[in-house]
Length: 372
Figure (cartoon, rainbow, N blue to C red):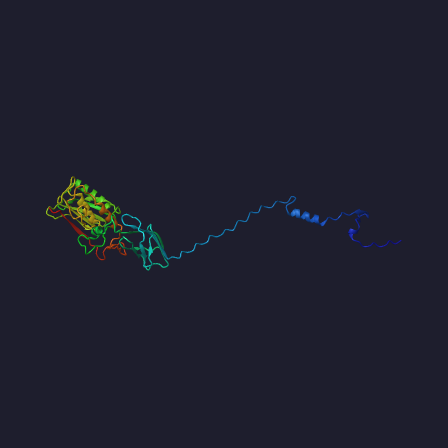
């Protein structure tokens, strides 16, 4: 009998398949698809023996840039205080004009601030200040884009300051009231040379030399409000003329009408002292007040009224007077806060180093002896 041909079928239709010997054996059941996917997923997530992945660092926050501050709108600014000369108390309500711009006023505590959208036409630039109860002032400031430390002091028209006395001491109003002088003063600490012989070659006693040098040192400090100190002192028989030095020389002339002379704010400076002519004091052949008087001239000051003052043109003061009076010291210290060449009433020159245009000749002041 001829066997009938097999019908074609899918391998999944018969769970048994013949082995190599023609025997039917069971075929393994097919694995569900979701188990295969699960196994693959576990392997991908580190299951089994796979190496763990490295930890991931957190992402740093994004830094917000600091905003650039806006550029100030001013071209230059000035801030500071207005104060009274001498007392240094605040000056309120002062009107200040910088480089010709609109005026600004100082507050109750003297503070002020001025800003401008344009720079000054030149440097230094002029500042004009007007305040009730004070002398008008003009000065010059060097240009800087912003200044915050400007102190402007004004001469008060009230005690202890006295404008008339200031004009005598600083501007020679005692002797030339119709021709007030510009302020003359030293601009650096002076060195002192004291000659130890007189003009005839005779030795000056050491006690007189010691008294004179001590008075010179204290007088320089007192007449400048502490601005200047004697840089150095030398003694000797020579008669030098050196820039930055004041040379002190002696004569003994009983027929002279002067007790001393001095170059007014001269550089080189020079002081002449007449020994035994106008009265000595214990331990010295010339009065300490006479020495202080000539130092006052050497530092730039003129004669004043009032016999009690060192700068009065008299020479009969007591031996105990060795220093300028407090009123002299006050007004002299104010002068030393001004620029050389300052004009009446209180006007600084554009160049603080200027004195008199074309005139740098020291003035020799002779001090008369007391009438008897």
